[in-house]
Image 1 (cartoon, rainbow, N blue to C red):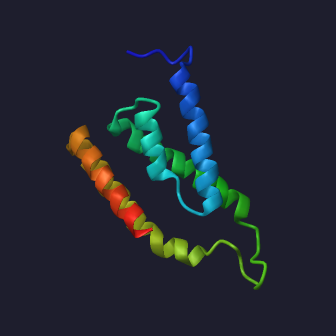
Image 2 (image 1 turned 60 degrees about the horizontal axis):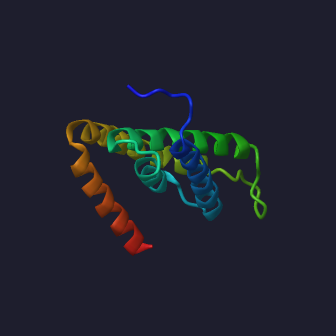
Length: 129
């Protein structure tokens, strides 16, 4: 059983790296999820079965805050909202389906297989971008 307090050096380093990853990825217009999984596993020493859901919850918080900040803003060049609510309605069912399937996969498979799948997925994404 691990104690939460006092915080260790890895906790402070993880918080700083997590904050920097979030700032840089949001500034670049991409999601920080995959980068956060690596930070949580490598720096904060979380097992993959904890790091992946923690990254998802962090992303939920980031996206919720972004929507709260942007829901009243208007597009600078046309008379429409800056948030495309129709696109959200189209994408959300598929995203939820992926989250449900991912939750089951995370529960069934062991950590080493999840890490191999994560490395493969990140390699494909890095190669395509």
